Structure formats: structure tokens, C-alpha cells
Image (cartoon, helix red, strand yellow):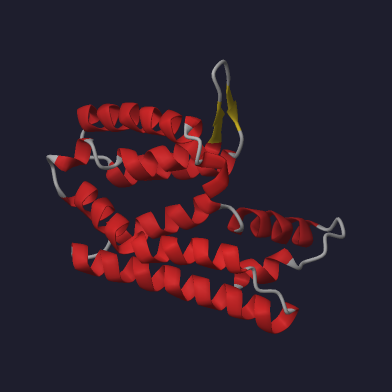
Amino acid sequence: MTSKYLDTVAVDGSWVTNVLHFLGDLFTRLGIWVWIATLVAAYSKTWRRAAMNTFVFFLGMLLSYYIYSAYLFGFFPTSYFIGWGGIAIISPLLAAVVWKAKDNERLAMILPALPMGLMLSLSLSIGLFYVDLAHFEELIMYVFLCVVFYKNPKQMIVSIGLSIIMAIIICISPLYFSVL
């Protein structure tokens, strides 16, 4: 609900409204939600709790955001609701992957590349002949994910390498712009 409220704050040049506008922009991007859900899943006690906590998080976010929009503004974007609903439905599976990546020594090299690669793809614009920093905040979140998934230097090097490959695959995917 805070995210939707921040969409409506007028910017008058004061530092308070500039901060609120920045937060409104940040909370409308996918990266912050991926980061929060990853933290919720990684720090849950079991993989079942990770799945349940992440699902409840996305369901609560989804319902509060769209009920707030419909009630106060008479606006209900069905296609976005269905898209975020799909993310909420698959979030338990993704949360279990994140929890296993944090908890399992053998899988800790491969599985962190999925959320880390997605976060890296959200922070960088990657093309055939260029790499550009699109969102500095998502790059900071990527670094925090590296800290969350850190086990040892070898594991982190492999995870970062795989996350770079995953980010490139995500960015060159033909579905990238239609989904994100």
C-alpha cells in the first residue's frame, strides 16, 4: 500500500518530497520485490516456511496494492494483477530454491545464480556491444544478495560467474521486455 501511496506524492522540490518520489520510483520496480522476497526466503527456518512466508508476502502486497488502487482511484489494471498473481503463485517454488541455495552446501554454487542473475539483469542494460548501469539501487541489492549467499570465496566466484551468465541470458531473452 505504501508503494501505491508513494505513486501519488507531488514533487515540489523539497528534500522530503524528493525522497518520497525516489522511494515511489524504487518500489514500482521489480528489483526491490525480488530482493525482499529473497531475504524472506533465505532467512526462513525451513524451506516450507520460506515458501509460505514468500507466498503470503506477495499475496498481501498484491491484494493491498490493487484494492487500494481500485478503492481510492477507481483503477484496476487486470493484466498487471494477473501478472503479479502469477508471480505470487510461483513464489513458493522460487522461495524453496532460494532457501536451498542458502542452506545446502552442494547447491550453494549453482542456485544463488538465479535470484542474483535476475537482480543483475535488472540493474544493468546488456546488449551485444555494451553494458550500461541502468539502476544503481538494484546493483547494491545484488551486492547484498552476494553477502546473503556467501559461503566461501570459491563458491562466491562460481555464483557470481553463473549470475553474470544468467543476467545475459535474461537480457537477451525475447520475453524480457514483455515480462519485466
